[in-house]
Length: 178
Image (cartoon, rainbow, N blue to C red):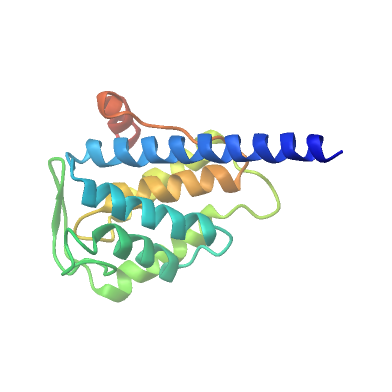
């Protein structure tokens, strides 16, 4: 009996290691999409993921701001965990400055609209929520990386597998936003 238990524990450990490798690859590719190549950025992304995953059952504005804070704390401590207080350029479009309360309200509405009530969301619905988050663009920087972590959390919460968007596929990913 002990031998079967050991095999089960070994298999669980192997699955855990495999999942960690997939998450690390996802986070590394997410950084590469943003042309961020530093180990500091990957280390911060891993910490942000750990927080996001451990608290995935309680998605709130505070949760989103903490993911952002963990992602930005070493690279941009001046904006880490804060909503933007300026206009930002997204591709060729300008998102005008908005009052903090307006951005926070948009995040609360996004949360209310993207947490399914009593049913699992489809792949397309989760993708649509990601696009809506990016349209809010609540932060001065790190919106893409924050949004992709939230997208993965939504996938997990809805029984969908982790999906990696590779840097070499970023133009296909950008088509989601057109």
